[in-house]
Image (cartoon, rainbow over all chains, first blue to last red; front, side, top):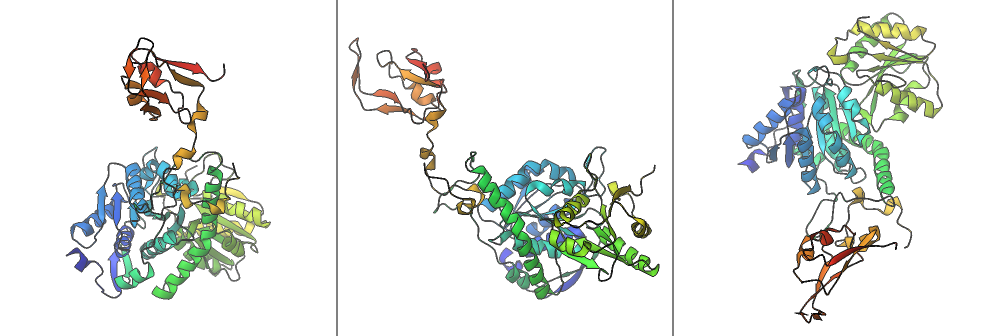
Length: 397
Length: 105
């Protein structure tokens, strides 16, 4: 019965889905073998939907309801270690509890895919959205894609399996997107034909445990070995940007929706730009239109990839500008600049030898409302900006 | 020892693909004290053999006659290539037939 339901060819259909359901549908269409998952707001509806798919016989996967996120990722690693296509999802405190295991998944070079609708971190407790959780995970060795709407969530989960399982990569991939604003908002999502998805992401093979070729995974590595193993991991991450671009390109050709690590809006003749990721993208594009109607040569770029940081593409957009801003929805306490992505952009710019005054805009912390006109104000500020600085928008002084 | 391989030659993720490779690691070099079994005092009770966490107390088919004339069919010997010198055997020995002797004296 399971075999009959799975792999049914339906052709592309357009359905109304939340961002989380889009992630669950993508995991189902990717024909995952294993999902180990623990509920946490705002991720829970992924766990629910996948459980439903398995219970209804629509997905022939081993579903493990674990007792914590630490266990969720550990069990997912176990699945990937024996060659299963493994998937999980979490948010916020759950991602923090997983933190130790995030490093292990990447160090073992296992092609796990995880959906992360982002949420602010405690304390104080907030169930609402910002990007504090995912920004904390940037240095764990996971490739991090970032989606701005439900369709992008679906598409990027499919892309994530192809990137992760590519023999040139073999790294876990996180598909991040904003909690509630994307995870719980119902949008029209085009689901491709199941057979087309399967032919785009045939199941890969990797260094999985196999009794006919005994091996030991996760051993101790002394000072004579550890550095080289981690250097290999560094190389795989650094070079993965080419594979990501290639997979996104291939996805566009096959399914008609185009992706690249960085996308620009009205950047052709722009003097001023706002760098965004996540849902901020939608607000900022409208702000670009409004600023243009006021005579400001405004543009915007969006990072579809947070790790590896797409330095070359970002610099190619920013190097000739008069000034730019980076909007961050997380705070780096005590860092030279409070915005994590601002820090990345600034370091990429410094290493490329270009100097452009840059504004770090902190906004939307704990889902504080962001208004389109806030970003029109940012463009006005950029026209006057002669040296880099930080502004906290929306906070009561 | 020949120079270790470059990072490009290493197996992905540090996986060990050669079964039984732990025999190449002479953990005996970690030792500061070594257990020395007094074969005359030893009653062949096998407790050291059972307690050794490394399994390096060897039960050998070597007949032995003690000074008091007791005949034993087996002899217990320590494999010093892998004994880490933890001292559990000496601690557990009911007749105190094992001494921990410094490697540096």
